[in-house]
Length: 255
Image (cartoon, rainbow, N blue to C red):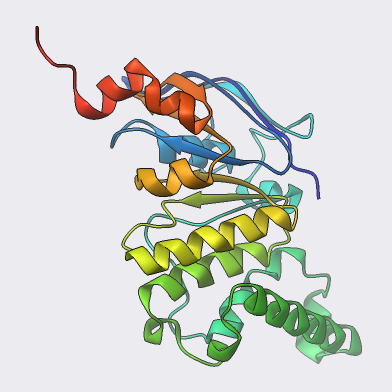
């Protein structure tokens, strides 16, 4: 896998609102990088620009030296990005296994005729997809749930299923938008172990998260946004001591 991301001088405006103001960021292969900041800081907007949901007002996004902003979301997915969302977006009428297989559609080789006639190529592709989906479910600890419906899963397992479906697109970079949101302490601990194991498997991971204990214990480096601007970056230890970060989160005491 390869997964070097460079965000250069990125600006995103919505009318008179500047959601991202000349943001720079670099993520290296095999890192877990956090993006934190108060509500409305521009974190999800940054993800939306990187993945092609929004077209940047100005600035550039590079993946392994190739400029990707301006490409369509499905083209960016094929280049190696996958993401999850703040609000869980599973297919409620499909099984856990089928949800993961749906993630593989962007890599499908079978054409319309193969699909209509259910040719040998189509059957082989379906068999390969099921095999890979089962491998991913095993990695995520969801094998026993493969025939369950998503709404029957505990909340933490639904989050894991979203990550599993993202993995099914065969990405090099996983973007996780508040993966620990709504989880209890046990579920958060399990998620932390899962994310670390994904990094060990070669994935590069960028995550938005409000759970500071989670962020500080798992990230190699952290970027901090406030009002659309990058106000700090560094290791967890450096971020915890940064006065601008403390002020943005806690407010500055009056003299």
